[in-house]
Length: 176
Image (cartoon, rainbow, N blue to C red; front, side):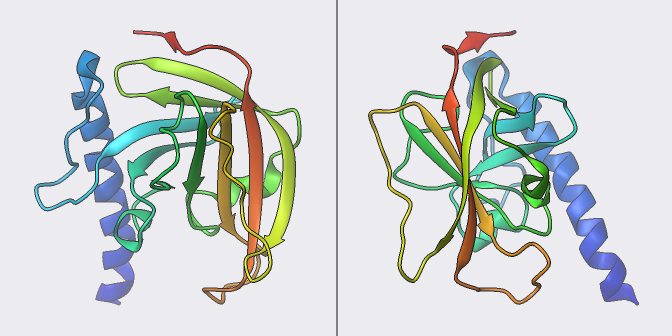
């Protein structure tokens, strides 16, 4: 019973610490690690235009960061910046909302320091990673959100990915 309470409690505490690190970025735009031993830090926040879903994006899309939030895939542009950014997260937590997004819906990306950029979803696809890859287009201002598929399948490590592609519809704007 104690272990069953530990995991949800850890998740709640982590979100509080991530939020604090996000707020500490201030006008410099560089957020500190959320806890002293963290090997990641907040680099962006993504949210749906209806404000129903929002998540802090962490540096790195590895198991240590994905346990606490969506992770930015190394080698792609920073979310909300110029170029193609890829962000991955678990289907049962931070990207569970992707099952409900539709083409034409807007996604807002905010960087620490208050810079925001709007994107519109232009395509949703399911790919099999055994035979397909996500093509990175560094010359386009794209945001690609990736999670495992199907959403109802709780077996980890399956080959299918749910991929949401969104294109920037405006330049970055400082809202602070």
